[in-house]
Each structure stands twice: as structure tokens, then as C-alpha cells.
Image (cartoon, rainbow, N blue to C red; front, side, top):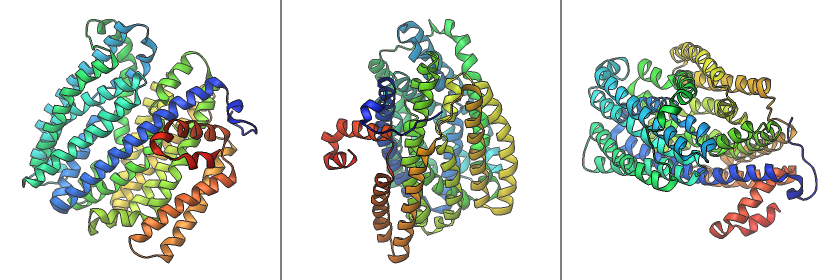
Length: 520
């Protein structure tokens, strides 16, 4: 199965139902990519400010505590956010059932957030002994333990917007306001002379206020009033779905984020800071996958519920190809100029370049197979994913430990990259086995070939031009080369349709009429 290129007018080549689904996902991706790009810009700016303002050692303390909080935030909702995507769209004609599902999501998150905060408070000293072993770490991680539950509430807010098809609401709260508040509060604490503990306290205070304001705004915008009155009737089905998803999320931590914990435990505090810096850049490389995944889950859930598997596969193919097409130039920039980007954090952080390159291999594989994890959950194979997550979690713990002992930071990146690659490879095969979904066809060769040409151009610029100016020239020259190569090699009709329709929609704001005419 797959999408084959044909001639003629794009609108005639793409069936109306497929066209509408693609445009829905693509519009969500455009909004989300803008939001995530803004989020990454805010996050990267904050990390650079903290790395330079705190110094390598104190920044390592902050980085380890922050990463632990991020890991716990992945399980604090106990599968509530995917459950919102699974059930809220199907209950659009039953407001009381929607209220019950959202009420369960908030209650579950608050309960688990409280439990995690208490656990972190009690075990903070022991965590410090096992990781960075620094006196400031205990107070810092205790502040961030409180933050975990607050982040969970904002995740439920964002998930509610996403479940009703509002990418904009999710982007505003989760992608822009959350990192924006974090940047303002941390910068203010630094300017007032506070240490890493003061920075952590300021972040918790700011994001806590944001969470308090976000809930009533979400109710007003979505029209869904969280209620425990209708929650009783939904609880069994909700937790039957949420529990294996939560277990998958827990396994995912050990499978793809054990590197963060092991770097802190086996290497130095400075190494933890360096690894955090490269993860900031890695997060930018994940933008295409995350953007196109924004509205794919509810679309996939609806198509699967109506037994439209062939259309779902066509959407899967087109979206995956668009993900690869947008990812490749980002990978090329980081492969060629990654060391220069790491110098923004300080000269010490260039030690993260080789681990960055290794990690990017996992990003490519994880993105190249598309939304395998979401599709498994939206097609009711959450138990299979849970088993797979835990199997690979155990494998990753063993491999990453051995790799870090043998290779240091490079080993941490290698273990995680392998885990990402293996899991996504198995998931795409399981989707083919269970549902007959298979995204790949010959049209995928076009962006890969264009990416190879782009990489050669960027390397040539790097060898010809010295200094940071080479990054600007090489990146712009590479992007122009990539677009030209895609045009010469031939763009798939569905991709061309999506781009043209989106440019039609946004040209007034972006003023890119000449580019639209070129793509025509």
C-alpha cells in the first residue's frame, strides 16, 4: 500500500476526503511548528542564559534536576492525555461524557502529581547521592518535584484543546506561555542574584500561576466543564485505556531517557550540563515529527472507528513523507554546524558534538517511520505498545550503562539512539502486521536524494568559509539548494497540494506569493 505519483491537476488527483484530512493535519502542523519553534527559541535562550549565568557546575545541577522533573511529567497524567485524544472526539454529541472524561483527567493528574511531589521531597537526599552529589541539588529537586504536578495540569489543558481539534490553544499554553513564563522567572531570579535554588523556586511560582489561570480559560474556550459527576460512568473505560498507556510512558522513560539519569550517576556534574545542552538542540530536530503529530491522533482515531483503513494508510504515507521532507534540512545543519551551535552555551559544551551526531541518527529513524506510537494507540493496540516499551526499556538500561562506562557521553547518545531506532522499527512492522498500515513507497527517495545534495553543498561552504559567518551562509545556501533539488527531482502531488493550499491560506500574513507561484 502507498501513495503513487500521477499527473494532472493536484485537486483531481487527491480525493476530497483525503484532501480534507491532509489539510486538517497540515494546518495543525503549521500552527504547531510555529509554536514549537517559538518554544524551542525560548527554551534555547533560557538554557544559554543559565549555562553562562550559573557556570558549568551549577548549571549541571539545574540540568539534572530539571531533566528528572521532565521525566516524571511524562507519567504524572497517568495516560490521561492520550485518553483525551481517544475519547473526547468520539463524544462530541455527548457533552456530559466529555465532561466526565476531562474531569477524570484533571483528578488523576492532581492525585499523581501530589504523590510524586511527596516522593521526591522524601527521596531528594538519596537522589543527590546517586547522581550529581552537590549540596544545592536537594533543594532544587524538591522545588521541581512540586513543579511536576503543575506541569501535568498544563498538559491536561493542552490535551483538552488538542482533543477538540484546536491546535492553536495547545500551542499557546504548552508551547509558548509555559517556556515564556519559565524564561522570564528564571532570568529575573538570576538578575536578582539568586542561585540555582532561587531559579527553581521562581520557575515553580510562575508556572503555578499560569496553571491556575489556564483551567478556567480552557473551560471557556472549549465549552467542556470538567465534572466528576459523569466521571463514574467513564472511569472503567478511561482507566482500561489509560493504564497501559501510562505503563508505556513509564517504560518509555527507561527506554529513551535513562541516558539522562545515568550521565548524572556515572559521569560528572559538568558532563550532565553538556548532555543537557545537546538535548536542547535535539529537541529542535524533533519539531517536524511533533508538529505533524499534533492533529493526526484524532484524525486517525476517527478514520479507524469508521473502518477506513485504506484512507488512513494514505494519510499515514503522506504525513510521514512530509515529516521526512521537513526534517532533512534540520539534520544537515546540525551535522555540519552542530559544533558552532554548541559554542553558544560556552566553550566547554563543544564536547557534546560527537554525541549530538550519534543522537541525530536516532532522530532520523524515529521520524522516518512517522507516528507509529500514536497510531498503535489510536488503533487500540496500546497493550502491544506497552509490552514493547518495557522490553526495550530493559534492553536500553543495560546497553546504555555499558556504553557510558565504555564511551562516556557518546555512549549515552548511542544507547538512546539505538533504543529509538529499534522501537520505531518494530512498531512500524507491527502496524503492518496488525492493520496493514505501511507508509513507504518510492516517493520517499526524493527528499533523501535532495538531502544528500544539500549536505554536500553545506560541507563545501564549511570548507571554503571560516568563522560563524559560514553557519549563516551554509544554512541559507543549503536550504535554497534543498528546495531547488526537490523541484527538479519532482514533488509528490499530495505534498504539492498541501503546500499550495497552506500558502493560499497564509500568504496574506507571510507575504510569500512568489514562492507559491514557484511551487505551482
